[in-house]
Length: 266
Image (cartoon, rainbow, N blue to C red; front, side, top):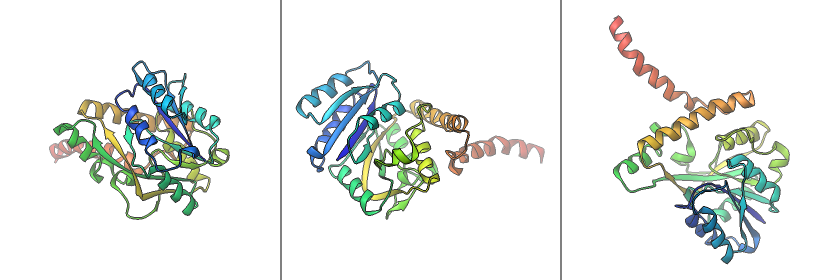
């Protein structure tokens, strides 16, 4: 039995396509339960979810009064009956073998969490959108983030996108930290690793993530991600959520700013 959790809010543009991907999975639907945890959307997201659910009862609309992701995930975990928990993002698409491939790898690798490579595509087919997608797929843009640049064999990782978890992981390592509006997945995966758990990134399963299509949207998103990396360290009292790649942009920017000063002094 697999429980699929999809937190979302105001995703009317994408949510129907995500649910169509779920319906098209080659995993037996009688072994699936899907909770779409809606953060009190103000657009057509609830109506779309409920219309799909009417035709596919294994998909359920669940209101998430807290509006943010961690409480939605924890609510779904507590409601779920599955032996395996799969998290999906509402801003992505998934091939038909996505769930079955993750479940197979979870079992064969004896892992606690597995994830597939995230292929970044533009949300809109414009020059800017294509440039942003290229930046987020290149080591210069994302550093050593393997789930964005890809692997050729199953590779142990510090974190993976979304995640396919053994249910007992949440008994052993706790639930998602509800203080963290962002970065809750990285923090949880770091907790798994610190407790001796195994996380693998696998090459034979992938999802397609739709990147921001304008530079202002990209800058805003990356600023918030960086802000919550630091806030995660503040709330948890540890620096385990920080990696070397998080400091590279800072050092590069300081280098650019200090280079003219150094040149003027010589």
